[in-house]
Image (cartoon, rainbow, N blue to C red):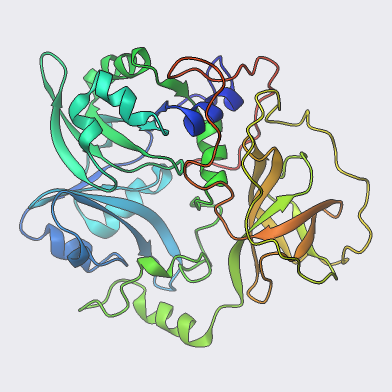
Length: 387
């Protein structure tokens, strides 16, 4: 996946929020488990409970280390009765296979994600059967002439509606071109990162990894505490739960347009919490650059404490909100509406993610299904990481 296409990260980001974008996410892994023992292998290793779903469904889950930390977060595609395609993060495919068994079939297929409020309109033109695959559903379908087998899942990493299509590698270019011809805007890694950050989605190696359990990350809902037989890392996780966590994953949104970056310090302000419980109304700005050309913040902000409370695990500029946004782990006592300073000089407010809710971006003012605002003057977006 390139960092960006000629249209630029800003245009790609807004295309996904306002119409439809297509991403090549073939760098993600696919570990396939098949046979009568596949279900039990996954059920005994992963935190979520496969008994809650059935063939033809997908499930978000975690693989833990023995100390309760998240080794990887992934989505399991339950393709049919005795076949599961596990979709780990790119850098973790080998360790996930070592823990779960199965076969690494990553190089045999490509994965194309179609995302955005108009994603299904695009699919109706290019791959009509895929448009019928609902949220977290999984279907085996045929596409093209001659027909090639695909697996389509109603999943994604942008906070918008859409699907991901696993297609034989040799058919990927033809599928990509068909989706673009149907109106999807090609989008790169820069937009993928800013989109997932606006949606408040964690990224392994940033919000998830060594020392961080599902509890600190606000993802305890993926833990099936009473699952018969338990799972790897459960004893340590139970101990963490009994002690209680001291920090939690939280969002911060700046008062101004200065982009936030990973590693920026976060200082609590000695101010009474305000009444801010949600992000401002989404207002996309076609003219706003998605990088360092934004106006700098004030040289200093009186009241900031000397010792930083946290560091941003991810940060960037929000093209929809036109403000700097970031994720960090703050003490559990810090509530939404509390005031903080970022990097000692950028005033910000604590919020509960997501920063931008699904469908909250205004429709594009540019005609055409896949049209997006021009970003010819955009400078490259500095990325927080890669999934």
